[in-house]
Image (cartoon, rainbow, N blue to C red; front, side, top):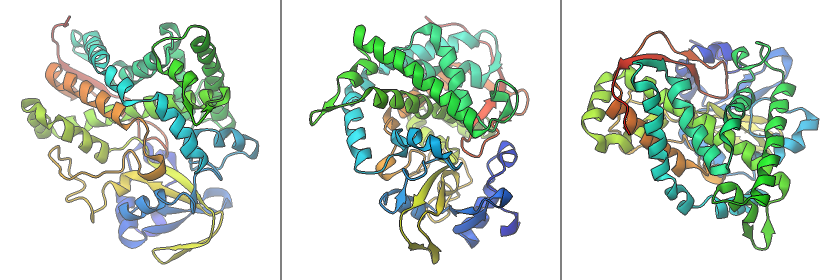
Amino acid sequence: MRLSDVNLTDPDIFQRGTPHEMFRLLRKEAPVYWHPEPADRGGFWVVTKYADLRDVSKNPALYSSERQGAIMRDPLPHDLPFIQSIMLNMDPPRHRQYRGLVNKAFSARMINNLHGRIRDMVTRIINGVIERGECDFVEDVAALLPLEVICEMMGVPDADRRSVYAIGNRMVGFDDPDLQPDGKPAPMTDGQAAAAEMFMYAGHLLEKARTHPGDDLATALVNAELDGQRLSDNDFNFFFLLLIIAGNETTRTVTSNGMLALIENPAELRDLRSDLSLLPSAIEEILRYAPAVHNFRRTLTAETELRGQRLKPDDKLTMWYPSANRDEEVFENPDTFNIRRHPNDHLAFGIGEHFCLGANLARMELNEIFRGIVTRLHDVELTEPPRRLRSTFINGVKEMRVRFRPGPVEA
């Protein structure tokens, strides 16, 4: 493969699997690479090395999330104010103020109080499939826990949860026809329409939290105050929209990717099953080996130099997490799935200003779902090749048919 063969804009390539061969070539020959875009739309910088991704993430004054958002697709001008109102797309000092307010509600105590309920949810999820001996792992297992946790936290009624799930799919799956109502890849406007639907639904939750307050995150967000400031109605709605993607879609994706990695590495699965003390390090390796997000975008605010390349104001730059997590300078045998890997300072949750707010919650969910899987679902194997998401953004599996030894339902 040559540099001229590198193509990180074609979702069909990513549907076949993460293009690690391209990333290895880029890390070796062009770690800061100018990538042309189709139809003469210019191009963007590609950052593939661990150290560079870390440094870019820690310098928001130079590499802005807010100027054009954090997604590789260029936003439509009239959508930019909407996009800039989501915490993921904010720069300091606005980002720090907003995050500080949300942190007041999204507390360690609230997360820790969920532990027992999450374990009960896992029991119910596995009870739902264990007697059948087969299932679609994505829909029947991986998708259920993070959706239920977020909806439980935010007070979403049971009757609305599948609808929330479907809208979330449309928001992240704009390049995948299977996730769109008309069976075609969606234009940018359709993705924004799905986001607007989620935004409107959040308004109903906000009103419910005000009129019928409860012991949930929605009520805590309504009442959160920092230095005399509270979240506005729009702030609340935007946070719910972000939570559905960052807290639901990504954890589902990591669960599916992790199960696939364990199936493809049966010796590691056997070791984990025989020694559950390996579970925390196995979760970290799952996060490193196949992170949920392929890339995030930044926009240059001033001229600078990175690894000898001259970057100009308003240049688009993309950071590629699957590549950084397999950087040979940081990880020994990076293409090997090793549940005993230590140290394992992966970047699956990001680093710097935008380090994932829900990292502790995600780790708790992943530990509990894989504890349930390895202790109750035995002899798991694929019945057909997984169907991957057609996306250059989310590193997802949309269907994974598996079979396993049937077992008993637990109380």
